Each structure stands twice: as C-alpha cells, then as structure tokens.
Length: 335
Image 1 (tube, rainbow, N blue to C red):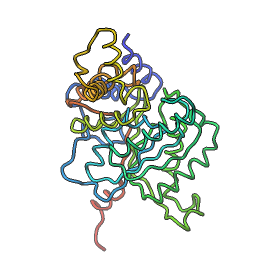
Image 2 (cartoon, rainbow, N blue to C red):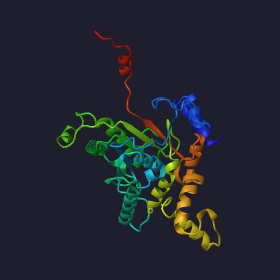
Image 3 (tube, helix red, strand yellow):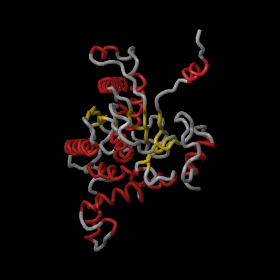
Image 4 (cartoon, one colour):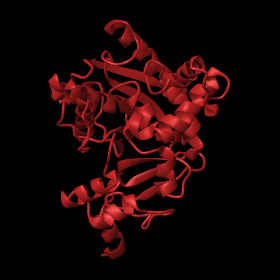
C-alpha cells in the first residue's frame, strides 16, 4: 500500500478529515474541485500570485525554531507575500546549538546565527528577533514565558499575518517545532485581548493577528496550496544562504567535489560550485529527494497535482467573516 493512501485512510478512520476532503486533498488532478471554497472548510483553495502590492502596509511575522525551518518548508510563500507588499520580521525561538556545522556548541550557534541572518537578508525581512531557548530542549521551558514574549512582539510589530509550524500536526517529532507551534498559536489567540498580559499595555496596544499560514513536516491536513512558481528561485537562494545546515547551503558543491574525487559527475550539478549548489537545492532537495531530506513531497509534484509548476501547502486561517453582518445587510429595514 502506498504511504499516501495509508495516511489518507488512517486520517479518515481517525476522524481527522472526511472522505470527501481526503479526495480533494490527495487526488485532485489539475484544478481541484471547489477551488474557491472558504478556508474554514475541508476544501482546497489555490492562492495565486497577486498583481501589484495588495498587502502594502501589512506586517508578516515569520516564525521558526531553527535557521533552516522556513527555508525548507515555506520560503516560497514568504517571498510571495513580501513581493506583494508585506513588511516582514523573522522570529527564531532557539539558539540552534545542537545541529549544524562547527567544532563546538558555541561555534555551531555562531554559524547558525549567521545563516539565520543571511536567510533574512536574502528574503528581504526587516529585522531578526532571537528568543534564544536551548535547542532540542524547548519542552523544558514554561510555555507561559514563550507566549508572553511572542504576544509582546505581535503587539509591538502590529502583526497581521504569521507563517509558522502547524500546532495541530500529528507527526512532528522535534520538541522545538511543536512547542514553538503551540506557543505561536496561543499567543496569536491572546494578543488581541486587553485582559491578557495587561502590564504590556503601558508600552504596546492589544493587537489581533488575523491570518495564519501553518506548515508541517510530514503528512498534514491542509486547505491551501500556494503557487510559488514565480518565487521558486528565491526559495532556492534562501536555502543556499543557510550554509551551516546539511541539506541546503553548499551541499551541491560538496557532492560535486566528492564525485569528482571518485571520477564521477552528475551533469545536473554543472561545472562550478554556485551552479552545483543552486541545482542541487532546486532539483534534488526540493524535488527528487525531497521526502528524504525534508520529510515532505516534492514542491514540483505538489504543484503538478493542482496544475501549477511549484507549490507549497498550508493549513490556513483567514480573517473571520461575520454571517450576522451578511444577514443584517440583506434583511434590515428602515424604521
């Protein structure tokens, strides 16, 4: 049995999605049925590039636990939103001490910090905030503190939209990922109410976050597919910037050099290091070997399922729509 079919059946049997939603999510060739359906139902909405800068004046918070999280899974969508007018800020929750290049924890931290800031520069994010929690140990921290710090940042920056991990993902193993996800969602929910952390209101105002793009490693219930075809090269460049991690950065040139020592060559890696790094990330990490390197299907294959060239998928929540307002506009009479 194919893994995708097994996961689909398991999720249906567990009550996580309906059979109709599963068909829409997994078996939609070309243009999915109910493409323009509302995001709060189990339907797939295709978000395509917008003309101009419709999000001018809005603020995007890009939140990750480690310097390679958003580059791996959501950099195409972040590039798209920034291109459409958002001002973006990067929030990293850990100190990135446990994984990456370096001969000591201190060197690893410094190298990952450099990659994190390089990623922000490539994307055009305005500022970086590091919360500095111990890597792979975020589950030992009091989530109240993490929430409070995030609430302050959401209020200070007046965040409209966030991109982060899916707090309801059932397959995540890394505690940094799922603790970050739950803290982000709780902070998002609480930041708009004056009763929450009222001592902050001496310096910031209560502010509600109205949109969420949640990504996940592994199988995910999703309702939005974002067309990143125009931004796939920027996603590649974002991953090239994260040189301190193994899957991206200069993995292509390292592979090219290793093969040359063995008297071999992969034509796709070209004849110079930059071409090797670029093509490795685009055609191997994000496509041919995506499942092994990132834990998710190929961005190209995801796009092809929906008639797109390249795509990313999310559990999306947008601004709440009041059916009462609709009812009033249609039925209110003059007195």
